[in-house]
Amino acid sequence: MRLNRNAQGPHDRAPHHSLRPKAALLIALVTAMVAGCGGGGGGGFNWPASPGNPPPVAATPPAPVALTCDDSIQAGFKPDASTSVLLVKAFKKGEPLMLGGTATPTTEVAANDVCLVKLLVGPGNPGPVGAPSTSAGIGIEVWLPAKTAWNSRVHAVGGGGWAGGSAGSISTIDSLQAAGIAGTEGAVSSSTDTGHGSTFLDGSFGMNPDGTINKTLWTDFASRGIHEQAVKTKALATAYYGIAPKYSYWEGGSTGGRQGLNLAQNNPDDFDGIIANAPAINWSRFLTAEMWPQIVYQRDLGGVPLTTAQLDLASNAAISACDVVGGQHLGYILDPSACNYDPTSDPKVLCSASGGTNSTPACLTTVQATAVNKIWYGMTADGSVASPLADNGWTGASSPVLLGSGTHRWYGLTRGTSLYLAAQAGLVNGLASPVAPFQVADDQIALELQDPGFADAGFVNATGNGQSLWKSLTYAQVNNAFDRGIALQSSFGNIDTNNPDLTAFKAKGGKMLAWHGLNDELIFPQGTINCKPSINHALVQRTMSCEATCPCRATWTCRHDRAVRRVERPVGCGAQE
Image (tube, rainbow, N blue to C red; front, side, top):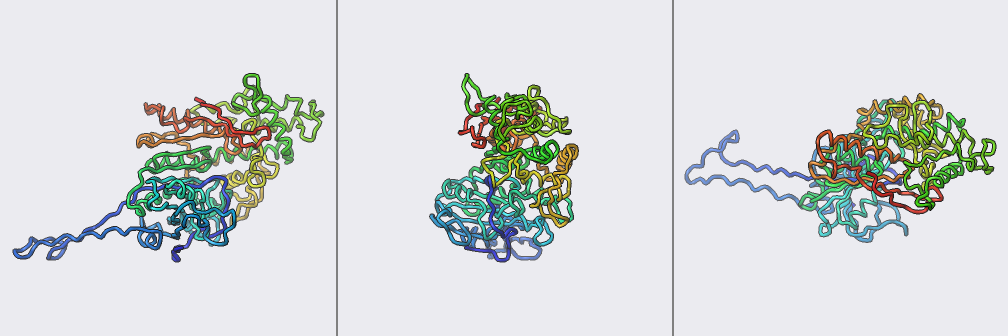
């Protein structure tokens, strides 16, 4: 193992476990050689050669030093003044993939010989030691296949949630996914912490110690971190193998999907191909709306959440009402946009006291059934909800106009989806979890309102930690937070990533594949569906064909995650044009 003792990693802490993969990419390294000028005289002027005195011979530039997986990378890889090499370590095939400690039977091992390189790209963000807002820079973890195994490609991976992690740590491996890509695919792979070492569920880094917005780290998180990842990964590959990569690809989901779209929008030359699934675009909008189920619990149900049994009862009732195709019950909803199920008029789920026939503890009162309709419909400015027969929450998803200017601010979870993220119970809270809000969403509220108290206790700041004050928010105050998130886009590094203009990416020959599970329990798929007509509209406005350029022109795959108990397998929903 080779360590740069003078370049300390910003995030030397225990590893975190990410739900979604991290990622990175590369750009070409340009090496400039300066030849010396010979000849007599001063001032650098070349005097004519005199008889018998042959003209000087230009000096031959030294050959570039070949890099190997050792100190030569630390000494020879200097793409710019802001980049330093933190660590270089070679792993042999079968060697445990770890930087310390004792391997166990479950420790992953290297599939083939690979080289791990950790980079730090400044300037970071100065501040008090230990503060989440303090950063030494952007950590990038690069995995290099053996020189004889390289397939001349880069395959970078994206992050999840608030990203973060241990890419800049010299004691912990950040992405076993990237290590696996290098070892099995033969492609150079990489990941980044996007400039901070918090976990993927912790947004504390986005607030300075005085409670103001940390614009530097928001920008690193939103866009600069992944661009530096692309540039430095390709530069290192070029220096290590002696030739630039032929093709570079990005792959990510959730935040990684948003990162892919951000790269196509703002740095179209970084990648030749991009996979962006379940993209977390319209970040401030959908994250504020993710708090909606919890606000409904507080305002409409007196702070008493629905139980998981009640949530399952409502979801399964919706499936039973909307899963019939050809006279047969499928056990899943093929097209949630066509489902208008209303639990307030279903006696099988309503309690006896509410005029129903359900006498189990899981029954719903009329008020509780209305709360479920609100969760399905999505956030509104005043806490209202439309009748499902008139609007089931999907109106506007196929429009080129972004939802949010009227009373209906954003979408809700689709009918038939687990409302509490049953597949990740105990790890990550679902949006309507009876335990607590989705951990990323309450942090976003606190950042929009610039008050850490509105987050839960995991949010740390010098002015005070999270106090769950979100519970006191009225519908009007949540609506204000939604508007503030939009107004603060420039301070948030333009995190929403919803520019529909991808003409530059198209012009350079870029290809993109995007899809979104219709039963996504965290990111509302309607927002992704909305991006297709938006992009089409932008391209048509430029009199360009959209047939091969729309990133959202894809097969919308219905990815049921076994979250609702009656849903047992993934299904393809077919093309939605």
